[in-house]
Image (cartoon, rainbow, N blue to C red; front, side, top):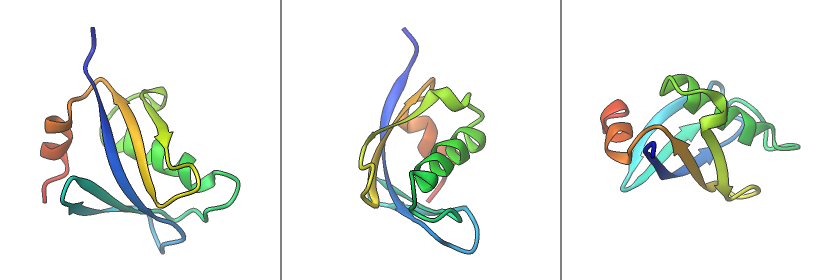
Length: 89
């Protein structure tokens, strides 16, 4: 069975550019260029993390937090330890 994990993200929509800010404890803080309208920020978040982690887009899905800045994403194919190594503090 392939690895998967749940990743807690604090999303900051409507930023000048999309980028990883860093870790706040166990939460990854991400600035998103897209506005929080009609799910655009959620789509950009999932696509951006998939690109950064070299995963297929379908491997990153939103589990909780559709309309909240605090989100929980499921990432198939990676462990949380691997993600922490990819995005150092």
